[in-house]
Length: 362
Image 1: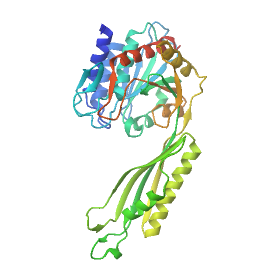
Image 2 (image 1 turned 120 degrees about the vertical axis):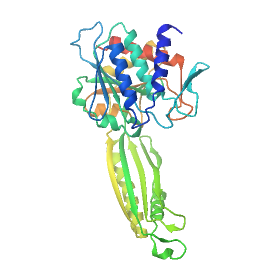
Image 3 (image 1 turned 90 degrees about the horizontal axis):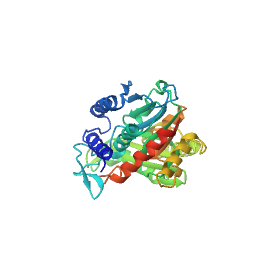
Image 4 (image 1 turned 45 degrees about the horizontal axis):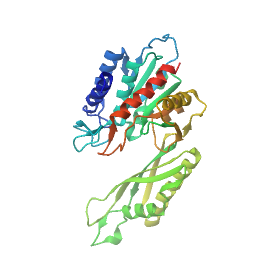
């Protein structure tokens, strides 16, 4: 590999070796701030939630030029402690039983290398959020008023040909069902099973892919303490998503009704707390950020794939707050699994795409 390629991989290895599972990103963000200050002359600060905001000065372009936003996230999913990266047959993988952490540290390393090797670029506002993997929590708590950029890119998609211009409304449902405890063998008729109520509700719901734009899921159910006891309480975590905001709210309402009705049917009670984590958004395919991404991907020898997704990214938050933002790829494969990996060639190709964008986006 060439010297810049070696530097890219060495930096990526350095990043993934620092543990940063969701909620435990502090050490990595402190280290990243030092790197950004040393190699890019960035002015770094952390906001009240611990998100890192770096202002990187322009290169060969007047500093008065409008800044461009780039965003990644610092956290990784579990198991993400003690990551040791290795190169096997041209791919970077984890040597052990952990994820690799390329989601999203590959994007961070790629952006740094692209800015180092770019002939020019406008001022860059680089935001690295916390707790993205558990519901875009860092971005949702970010004070975007400190950002001047009105256009941007999130580096957090797998395929390098992707240009994500839209995302869903995402509703979180936290459910508690209260029944009545009793001995399951001696006097079951005196009890009211919270588990039975939860099961009845779930069985009556439509879950999975409901239509081309909409999904629903019950992801966690916890209840009961002993095998021979009628369970008094059950807690569930559910969600629904849709590219159609009103449709998502409708599904969330229907799920709530199922929980409440099933609880009432067996003599239990249910409380459902609903929260709109983020709202459906879309960027016009005529927008400059879309055009810049398409041109860069084409220049790299790929065919741009402009798309909307039902997955959540920090772009949903930025778009909701008036920063026109699309998501582009980093080349990571099998993310959120211990088979997560990224090809060396894709790491370099991603740098080329990002560099093309920053050299022309002004």
